[in-house]
Length: 280
Image (cartoon, rainbow, N blue to C red; front, side):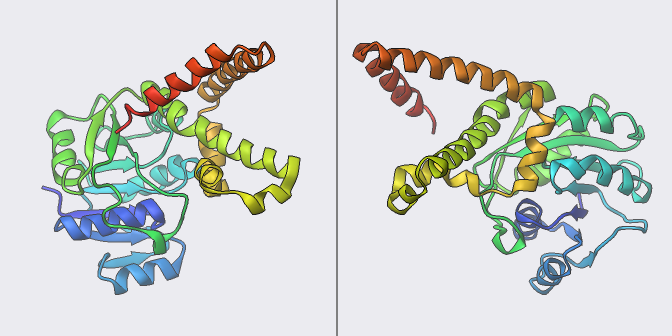
């Protein structure tokens, strides 16, 4: 049974996890964050029972959530290990997995279980003030456990945490994870930022007339720069290959337009509409 948790990082995801655990479970939570205001708010709201800016003491945690930007997950995981009991589950919420999993494996003790985690939920907003207890409801929660994670330990984490907060657990290999999120998350973010920069450089006055389509397409360009810098750099190989593939598709479309190939343009748009309708 999972009774105690530590959450490192009370931003949008970490704060939402804390609020979700408080709302849907009886798990007691220690919060760790360098932002004292976030700790104070979480404590005042009764979300956490204790808050510290730095964990340097033994804790009776059954599970630890590392909810920092991707670039800090490895360091934070390594730093917290001396204060954990045997059998503790450590998990992250990062948008990339290969770099994290391969680095953590180098120093993880046999008696600690690391389960890579990535809740497919979030917004372009940031910080504890935007945290939501229902953020994970009906969302896929991707899991990439190490081979040493026993089946009963993984089942415990899924049943006591993932399902109770309303998410849908999906277990996969970390390489497959990075390939999938590269397609549906990382490249789209780059394209959103690219379109925003392109429009500004071409005609910044056009922003005054932007309506729903442009705003929807560029919304994720509002996301935190530090977080996305880390994500892109830790999934570099996957993203590079996908961008090259995307460039080929764009080049093909330019040819259709140059050659007045109306039938192919129509099919291109119809296919996109058909594929988009399959997303629930």
